[in-house]
Length: 106
Image (cartoon, rainbow, N blue to C red; front, top):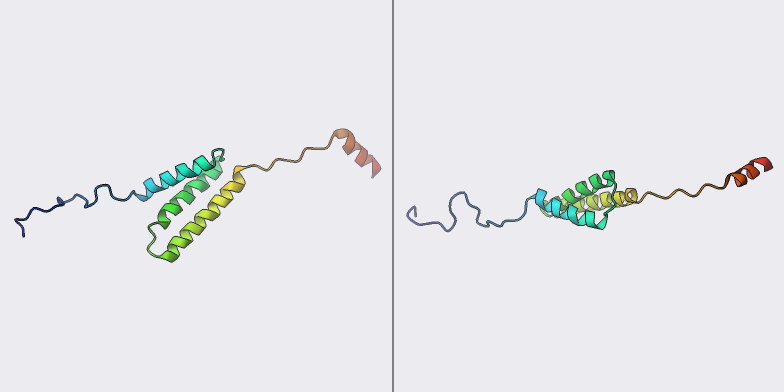
């Protein structure tokens, strides 16, 4: 058996292309998320990075339950980032004359 030549040299993966690392997969997911939310604030970007990492981890989770939990947490973070992404516009202030008129009535 030691005289046989192995198809796979020692120290070389049987699948050289292999699956991407979690970091690489998270970077690809983050790129997709940032194209969907191009005007994300810095704090929303941090939430999106964390969500991308959780999505990448969910694909490799040891159990379906953990996979579902990672994906649910990632969805919650994206939802939170979506809220912080678009700042709610403030209602316009009433004109000064109108405010003074209201104050005089009281």
